[in-house]
Length: 199
Figure 1 (cartoon, rainbow, N blue to C red):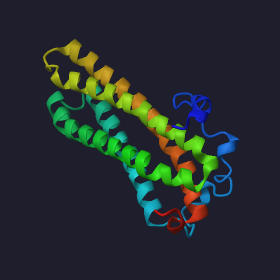
Figure 2: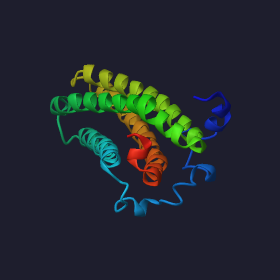
Figure 3: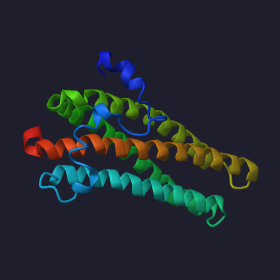
Figure 4: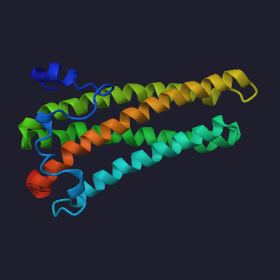
């Protein structure tokens, strides 16, 4: 993160922000979401990246839905665990890998292309750290739940509730982060084009 941006970044904390301030919306205002789908510069990389984001949204919703069904007693602990464990591991692994690509490959390209958005990309990079911490909490809660015997009724319910709370926190943060990230990245790509940006 750029040292001169630290105070401004703190004011845009993932947990409390509700979108970008005016000084980071100047390209988005020229390219609002309704023009994205048909824009000539929405090419292969941008479409692929948006699909990855939508994949995270779908996978997160599936995990939350399955957890809700388990908590309502619609599926046995054994069936839920067998379905859930590999999907959670894949979800968290892909999310971590995606963030690394953004932090070390994509964000430096965008910062060089448009210095007026550096603060925004610093905010997004900080988001990744915040999300990673909640991912670890979610993984710990899930591991506790997985190790709790089905015969330990109250303990299992407590473990399931702790996991579900962590999962809800993660998905709320992720939803805000993905939308804000798209609102910086896609307008910049539409404005400059993928070839000019070097994507």
